[in-house]
Amino acid sequence: MPTAFEIEQHRQVQSAAKTVLQQMAGLITADDTEKSIAEKAHRLLQAQGYPDTWYHSCPALVLLGSRSCVSVSGRDYQPNEERVGNDNLVTIDLSPTRDRFWGDCARSFPIEHGKVTPTPQLIEFRNGLNFLKQMHQQMQALVRPQTTFGQLFEWANMRIRQNGFVNLDYRNNVGHSIANDKDQRQYIDSSNDIPLSEVGFFSFEPFIRLKGGKWGFKREGIFYFNDAGILEEL
Image (cartoon, rainbow, N blue to C red; front, top):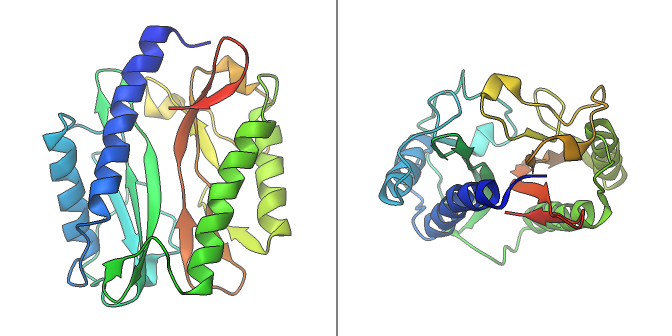
């Protein structure tokens, strides 16, 4: 179990990422590109006191439009110049760090009439966003300290398939442990039999597309088990 100090330090970084994502919802315009959105997000992270990233020198990974469904490592990511336009989906994945403490948070923003909308009219937008929100809630209610990374993977992918979606992640996983070294992360994949409680914190980040659909959706948070063995989100 993580210590109270570790929880508080990670929570501060994650809270900064959440704040920046909330701010970005009001800053994305039809003229923006992946590059300009990533630059805006990084400036906001810097303003929060988090100029550094743990993820391959990529503090903000932004995907939109024709790249909405592209899964790419931060090691290889280069932001595109395609404009947002009137109707689009923008996914922003932030990875700030301070010392050995990480944030890792992603949201997908539906764009209609050139602006982010909390109540999209497009059914595909509503279905994708609502499914991910519900999936996070269900995961948090079901997972126990003895649940393994592999069991969470199997459950998540079963839910994705049953609801008519596909897993877009290039590693085919749905999250990872939060580690001091990015290369030491444990992944939520089929072959990992380690209990989730053996790591202090883990991210849950399904990246999905409706079968036959156009848009790729992601929602990410960081979770840990409290002293009572209950899963909580930072």
